[in-house]
Image (cartoon, rainbow, N blue to C red; front, side, top):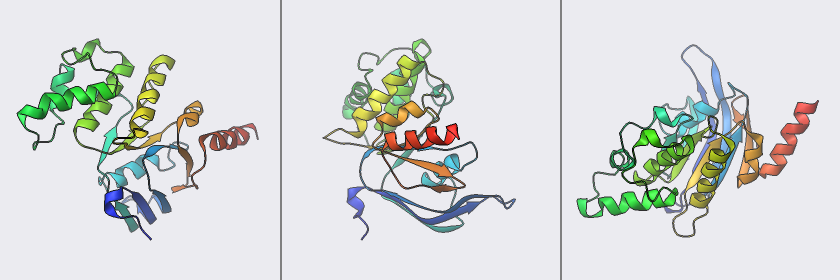
Length: 228
């Protein structure tokens, strides 16, 4: 039985996708995410991770199979400088606020989003003065104010130092485990130590996803493969 739409879910059912040149990227891929949490994907370059994200956010359509999604997706990229457009934190978030939000509630929504990513005092802060980790957390805040509840994170800590990496991971764990309004996040990573932070992890290989396992189990599996 499929979960009801209001519960929030994502499911791939035998999804395949190939480019016009005939290259098959996603091959009968089936998986589901039925509850909020931080879900991590690992896989070699060219394994299909980025194509999966494009299928989830509707940028491309599957050649066959079905995608069921009752969540509202939003992308967060590896380099926040490619995503942030405005001069200040406030003006950046105003770009993402739904047009249905009244002026009365606008600042409250922006303040709340900044608080959730530990940038509560930076409303008028120029973006060029932020660290890499702060910029990435501001990108997360942009997804929050847009009313997205499914974050697709493409190696969001790849360009960050260890301290900034941990700050982004800490915020993501807080957002995905909130008792009031938790979100779902799918996080692509090549940093295997990040697997210990997730609620579930899977390996992407040849356009398909393995079963979800604990981050520690996937970490050990990949480490053993590397030693062979």
